[in-house]
Length: 383
Ligand SMILES: C[S@@+](CC[C@H](N)C(=O)[O-])C[C@H]1O[C@@H](n2cnc3c(N)ncnc32)[C@H](O)[C@@H]1O
Image (cartoon, rainbow, N blue to C red; front, top):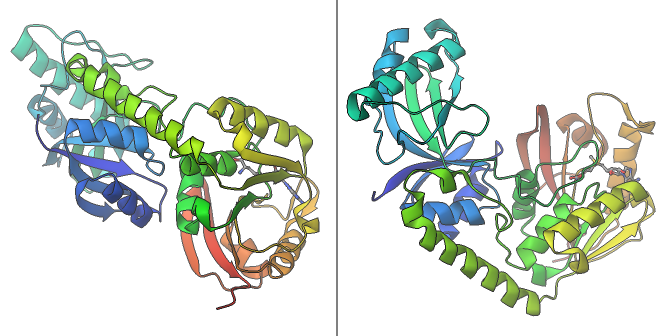
């Protein structure tokens, strides 16, 4: 197995941030697509990307591409995909299908045809077939059909990469860890250039991600990955162990010289409790200052990078909070800050109508199913 063709997916709009991150991880052949970046790497590098990417949600190997025009083509596609080294008779598998072509047929039916092709190919080749397991499969096969173009992937990550393992408890509307890290990348915060603050921290995701960045801690260091169950993984296990040991060493060394200031604030003491708990699980509780407070009563500050996710929604009020008024007051307050920036996620309408500031950057994205906007405002910059 030499060069692999891979796809890393991310929150929509953050493809350039992911591209920069993959470049810093020494990946080649980078090309941004809608919702992701394609790149080339060998298996060792691909494992490293799973361990180190803060922004990607999934890392998948592209193993086959073809055009499909009718249902029976899916069976043929299953018969043609390369079985080795990805499958073995002993390794269970399942198919995650995503089809955006109604005319071709129902997604579940197309996936079934595709699976029939795969198992018939196995029988022809090995005289027996692997079992399907939809709960805890060893191999996850991605099938994507967009405008008659079928792509077949092997997913490397297992659980999505946002599941770092530290968020054991959460408040009602937590942000995905990968989206939080993407917003921090957009804010361009660096530990040496000032205070990091999430003034509405909820379960603490932004502050914890900032602490992981400041200590150069690999975001995946506490979890397992799907590739560890692939049939040929035992041959790679030693390389994987070395990659993890190196990552632990880097984090340990960086922690010794830690000099960042990271603050997590929330009005709700129950949320702060959860944030502290999560930070303890992530091993960074001692690096974050947790304080109870109301953002609207915050004293003017300078040299700070604020990254936050205030309450928002389709409704005008959330928990009795008048949202337009809250955003208006928030805009008024942060305009008094000096040499600082605010990167915020909310609905485009709440930001546009109430903040009364022109963002230096804005990205249309999704937080779960909700369409929203991430905006960065430069605050009181004196040049
Ligand atoms: C959408 S949640 C934040 C979710 C968080 N990013 C996470 O990952 O869990 C909004 C948070 O803002 C807090 N909040 C609401 N009004 C506030 C205020 N005036 N000052 C500080 N925090 C406030 C809420 O208690 C809630 O925890």
